[in-house]
Length: 273
Image (cartoon, rainbow, N blue to C red):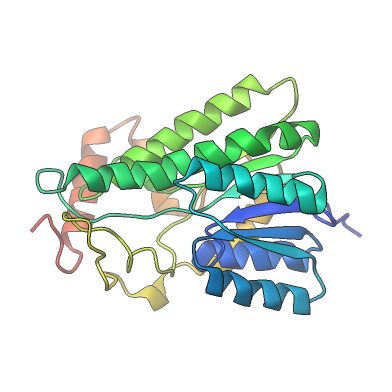
């Protein structure tokens, strides 16, 4: 029988109130982990906390705005106070955008960096000593936008590129400590991220430009997050399109540029039209 490496491990999941974060928290709970739930919505966290406890797993909900350093520090402190340590950190909290750089307000780009990049930095900074001590794992939930820029999503791509550079450096600095760092890039996943994507003026998009029912499921992504940790994966690009992008950008980058331009232009109400 395969050993359950997640049993009794202390796992922090940011952005746990919906989508990939929620599915990942539930998957860890099913594997016997002690799951710490972090998100801004107290109501949704309480609901998920009840569901996990009803399954028999231990959990802790901590209302957290990852764009605030003090919130991230408190998240780690509360985790250690409750469970004594941290084994795994899933940096999942994030927001998206949909606007041309010509039109977008700079405050929107700053918001993307504050949540996506700085949220990852803050949580990693305070959790790192415990995870290194446990030879645990740090995961960044990213996107193909972190491997190749996507039109209409300058702030999103910039934040994901920044996360990649940051996490890769943390991995290298801790080679001797055998710290596991994984960057996982799902495809378009059924979630609320497009609904809450910021437009040029900072308001939320409200409706998804894609057929959500046809997209990758959060549960499928959660399964691969745990599988990637188990196998000590370095990078996991979850779609063939993404893998081809990572390959072809080294050979024919102009072709990849044009392909993504056409792809994003086809979206309903695309800013590229």
